[in-house]
Amino acid sequence: MRSSSRSWSCSSLNDPGEARDPHALNAAMPQLDVSTYLPQLFWLAVTFFALYLLMKFVALPQVGAAIAARRGRIEEDLAAAASLKSEAQTALAAYEKSLAAARSEAQALIREGAERLAAEAAERHRELAQRLAEEAAAGEREIAAAKERALAEIGSLAPDLARTVVEKLTGSLLSAPGAAAE
Amino acid sequence: MKEERPSDPLARLGERLDRAERRRAERQGKSTPGEGLGFGFRVGVELVSALAVGVGLGYLADRYIGTRPWGVIVGFFLGAAAGMLNAIRALREWGKSSGPPPSA
Amino acid sequence: MSASPLAQFLITRLIPLHIGRYDISFTNASLLMTIIVALITLLLVATTRRAALVPGRLQSVAELSYEFVAGMVRDTIGSEGEQYFPLVFSIFMFVLFANLLGLVPYSYTVTSQVVVTFALAIFVVGLATLVGLLRHRFHFFSFFFPPGAPILLAPILIPVEIISYLSRPVSLSLRLFANMMAGHTMMAVFAGFVVALGFFGFLPIVANAAMYALELVIAVLQAYVFAILTCLYLYDAIHLH
Image (cartoon, rainbow over all chains, first blue to last red; front, side, top):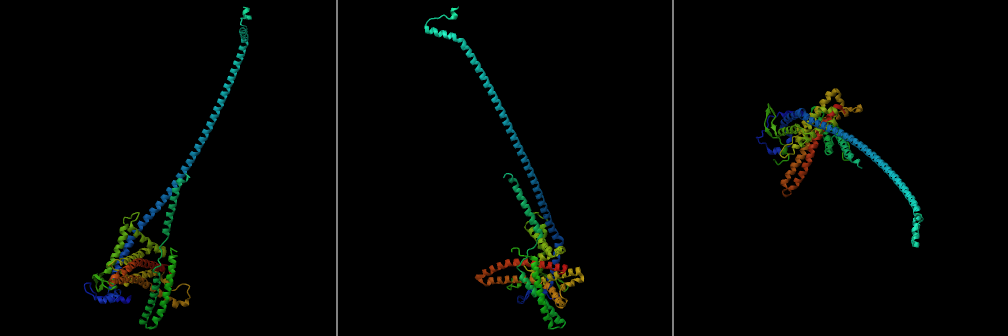
């Protein structure tokens, strides 16, 4: 390194317009052309230093900020999604609870209704049976009365009937004891 | 059956959230996959350059201190040893930094 | 272009400049270096100036490179590496863009010049040495004698360690330079065959297409290797073994 530094201060340089011997160039490795070292190193130092400053003070803070912003946003979004999820879960639980409550209420109502209906039906059945029994009893009583009346009427009709029969048989009018007596 | 229905997409959302979270954590924790391609070449370069430095230093000693021819000879062996050392270190670093290859 | 496969490495002075006896001409290499700096800055600054939440393609590239190097620095050096991140990033991007721009036809490969890679390597190793010296003062020299080694071996171990340390800039620069030069030379040689082979000229074209893909991989890989070795040297300087 040190030995070559002397040759960097090369003053006899070819300008681009100045034609170089192409055969000499083709023969050697251009990388070993010491006269090109100084300009290369100078511009390497200048450009690399510029790059370092640009990266350190302009580009990297900006890129880092963009990444940090996104990362923050993603974290936020994930947290928001998680909280939304838990909210949805509580809502679902509440919904299920109210659904169960409504169902049990409905079942209670149904049971109650059924019981009431059954009770009503039984009541009506009982009433009907009673009324029928009453009606049957009344009918029986009426029949009994009619029978008695009929029997009584038969007793009073019997002498008249006997006379009529005799008259028809004898062909003559018998005076009825009652009529004879008249 | 009907009760499962509304919780199903929620469970799936939960799964997806978990997966996204895990992926993010992974990405933040790790790291750069090593490449095995140029490694053999790297070891070769380590050997050669250490040898060159050893011989070069020996040559300079020969030339300016007048130890000819021992400078180059000793430099050669020391350079070879340093090259071995470099190669071994490179191997060790390789094993440490990259770990098992991602595919295997 | 010239027929020689090595002609592509020629330095031509575009604007001759001198300070005193010193030649600081603006060459094709200087032009490429300027373009490299401009492109890197443009890529990073322009895409993230009004950063979109969902990044576009170029913004993704910018952020990816940032996170890639940040991860490399964090994994290799640790938390103390934070302050060297801009430096490692600059080195990585400079070498990467130099390697990649060299693959653009009619352009020039800055990193195919051994002076450039050697200067970068000397800069990196020198900086790491400086960091180590400032951090550990005289204790830094214990770096050249591994702790626990028998003291009898010191006369051998110490020169070996010193040579090993001095070979760092050599191997660092040689690796990058050789990779860049070898690939480009091969491609130029194959390109020369295209005309020479006449009808069968398509064969070297196919070979060159494959080479081109390989060269792309190598360009990225070498930039990565250069950057990660920078990190490792800094790690050594900070932690001493």
